[in-house]
Structure formats: C-alpha cells, structure tokens
Amino acid sequence: MIWSARFSPNGQQLVSASSDYTLKLWNRNGKLLKTLIGHAGPVYFAEFSPDGQLIASASADQTVRLWRSDGTPVHTIREFKKGILSVHFSPDGRTLVTSGWDNQVQLWTLDGTLKRTLKAHQGWVYDASFSHDGRYILTSSYDNTARLWTADGELLKTLKDHEDGVVAAHFNQDDRLLATASHDHTVKLWRPDGTPITTLRGHSDRVSDVSFSPDGKLLATASEDQTVLLWDLDFQGDLDKLLEHGCRWTQNYLHTKAAESRWKDVQQFCDRKVEKATQSSFNSGVQNHG
Image 1 (cartoon, rainbow, N blue to C red):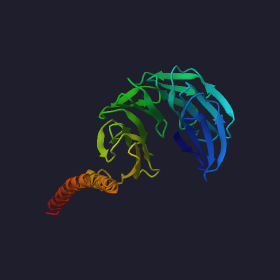
Image 2: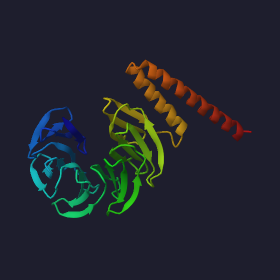
Image 3: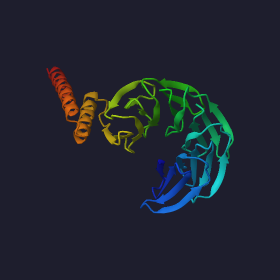
Image 4: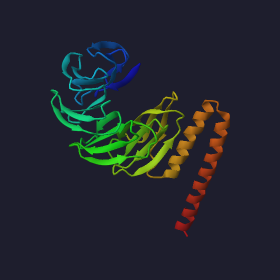
C-alpha cells in the first residue's frame, strides 16, 4: 500500500512512502529513479524539504530518517517509543515536526536534537504541520479534535465539532482558512480563531485527506468510499452558493453510483434549499433597491 506521495518543490520528482518498508523516487513521467531502503517497518509519510535538498520519512519502526534528494542516507532520529505517522519541515527548512502513536507532537533540529514536546492529544496524532508563514502548527487526532498551536508550542484553540477521528488538517495558502477531514465522513472549514464556518457533506465513508489548491479556490477531499471530490471555495462567504455547489457534487456522486432512491431524496432536498436561497436573495435585492 502506498501511504503518501509528494512532489519536490520544483515539480520534477516525486517521493512515495509504502507498506513495503521503502521509499521510492520517481521522475514526473513515472520512471522509477531509486528505491530508498533503511526502514524496518511500513513508511507512512515522506516529503521533500522546502529547498528540495533533503527528504524526511516517518515509519512504524519508531524512527524518522533524513535522506539527501538523491537517496543517500543522512541521519536517523531514533528517540521515539512508538510508530511515527507524519513528519514535516518548517517553511524555513530548519525544523522538523513529528506526530504518531504516542499522542505527542515533537519539534526537532535536522541533526536530531529534540527542541520541544507537545502533550498534544488524548489519542494518536495523525498529522502535524506548519502554517505557510511558519508561525503556527496544526495537529489532527484520533481523539476527534484538531488543535492550533504557536510554533513555540502554546495551545491556542481546540477544534471540537467532529464526531470521529480527525485524520488531516491543513491551512490554505494564505493561512486564513483551515480544513479538517474526519472519519465521521465530513470535512469542516474553520477560521484561524477556531470559529467553524461550514461542514462539507458528500462522502459516504471515512474521509482520509484534504488539500487546498494553490490558488485557494478549490478543496480536494479523498475518502474510503473510493472517490475524490472537488469543492468550489470561491464563494467569498456566500454559504448559499456553497450549499448549491455541495448539492451538485452529492447529486452527481449518487447518480454515478446508481443510488437512484437516495439521489432523488437529495435532489428534492437540494431543490428546496436552492429555491429558498434564491427567494431569500431576491427579497433582499428588492429591499435593497426599494
């Protein structure tokens, strides 16, 4: 099983992490360049450093390894007591943040010196990553929450609205919007102060990942229902427009899956909602021009 795949900053290479204990380097045409061997357990995550010179990998073997971009081993961090699920570089490339089965988040220098430990959650921490400006860390956990921290480890907010484990949490490109993905089949959007914006419902099984497009206008969500959904976020706070887009995606999904009875129920619900929103917008326009 391939657990992760990430492009290099210049887009010319790809690194994948696998259950077969290896990482693989590929060119953008899909040609295998090198297999990186060293881990003694499944590798759950790997990514390039911001300058593209290093690769960090996280494994169930209770280690994080650093490699040069050509696959040469550099350093191994062995100070973990349980498997590691994620590792990310800070935007300046000087710090690593790790998370895993020990419910903790830890910050490290590239030579393996522990800088700080966050007693982050009451369950496995699936992911921990920096904001794009490097000022914050966002964590997601099996304890049904995501948490926002300063880069120095001060807890700012706990995001609590999910009903099952939160497996991914990410900032958009300007760090003004957060998205969380959960095993409760939903994705939620938040403001950085922890205020919930809306819940995106469209998947019929656990959501496994979420990713903003570089321009921030689209959100991609992946699920164990074997689908990837694209959500239009260019609604500028217009939740009625967001509802309309969400309904369209859900209708298309159910129609494609030939779930005819469910498709009709959703269609009736969405038609009523869109009609109500349209009427409300019309009435508001009449009042504004009265």
